[in-house]
Image (cartoon, rainbow, N blue to C red; front, side, top):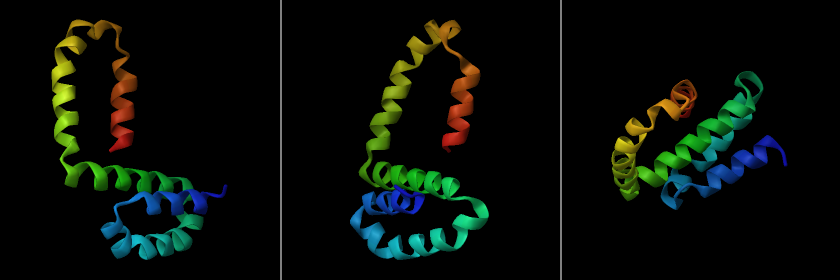
Length: 95
């Protein structure tokens, strides 16, 4: 499977209204920019967009935030066992 096919699948997984409005433009941008800025970075960007488009309008982010806050005491209690550098690096690269 080529990177363009992966990107096309990610575009297809976006909500229908978003896909109708921006889908063709996203594919055009991929075709134009894949050679200069790298197809991998465009695929990562489409994956981030996909997460944002499904989480933010649906309100699922509130449940995710509540889960994180609820787990915070556990993380603090067992903080010495968590590789914090890896966690922060992953969070920075995700957003």
